[in-house]
Image (cartoon, rainbow, N blue to C red; front, side):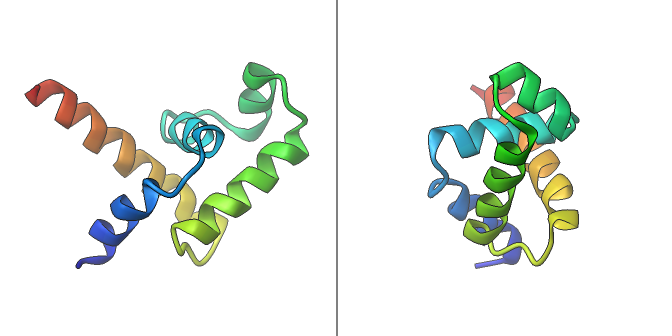
Length: 82
C-alpha cells in the first residue's frame, strides 16, 4: 500500500471529532478558527492535531495540512462521482 493509501486507511481510525478537525484543517481553517467554531480551547485543538498526526503516522504537524487538503480533495472527488 502506498503512503497516501495508508494515510487514507488511517483516516478511518480517527474519532468523529478528530475527523472534523482534520477536515476543517483541510479547508484551510487555522487552530484559532477551529477552536472558535467548535467551542474548544485552542490547546484542545492542538491536542487533537497531535493525536491525528500519531494515528496517521505523520512525522510532524507540518505534514498535517497537506494530508488534510489531500483528504478533503479526495472526498470532494468521490462526492462528485456519486
